[in-house]
Amino acid sequence: MNYRHYLEPAVRLTIAAVSRGRWIGEDLKDASAVAAHLRERGYNVTLAYWNRPGEPADAVIRRYHELLDATKAVGGSSYVSIKAPAFGADPRLYGELLARSGELGVPLHFDALGADAADQIFALVAECTPPSRQPVGCTLPGRWSRSARDAEKLAGSNVSIRIVKGEWPDPDAPTLDPTKGFLDVVGRLAGRAASVRLATHDADLARRSIEILRRAGTPCDLEVLFGFPVRTLLPVTSTMGVPIRVYLPFGQGWLPYCMRHVRAHPTFLWWLARDSLAGPYPDGFSVLRTAPGERRQDDVGAGDPEQTGDRATDRART
Image (cartoon, rainbow, N blue to C red; front, side):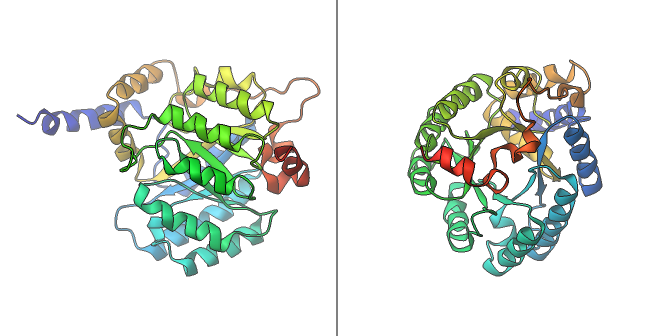
């Protein structure tokens, strides 16, 4: 008997129930309001549109243009995260989006998807990288064996790199440990990259990565996904003085994303439910404090080279 067929509707309802207050929905106005709230508390943000399956590329690109305008209004060193397959990795559409990004001074960043989309993404990054003060960004999953090689190629460039454990396995190395791979990429970028974005809710992994990058003089920030538990993570990392940003997805992707996580890691549902009992989700984002003599994260653009200029690049190459 296929128990999953009967359990999945119940799991979906459970996720929907515990996601109240942590699922932004489909309205950009709601995402912008959450972004403004987090900025008031000292966080930078990443705005992302999670498109519908089969949504036309032109419609997705229109959403991305709207996101650029909204992100400009949010301020700080906030940026827009995009998905290349959502617009068919069309160089023309991307070129128009990139031009608007440069006009507004709002960076673009490519999310990682399946391994089959990686070459498309890196082709766009290589062909359309803007001037040094307005770089694009891309994501390297620790779960992929190719990420170590990609890190070596990108380490000396102006591309901002986000490191994740990764959602989709590497077809050539399905048993690769994502935590080990994450740290391997961190080590290859330490002392060489202009800036690194650590996207993880694993507090120990975040701490170890921050220590490696800090010893090498490489600017970094921590990026957390809005909707995932943060109450045990943020107290650990905020005391280390690294800028913290929040990835804010809106659209139809939240429930399917959570369902994939539950299928891969059933304990995720318990983690989500336990966190929902601790109080309203936004309360987990306490006001960020700055120690005497330190600069606020948005004063220097959270270590992004388009904000910190040559000083960050110089430190990264020592």
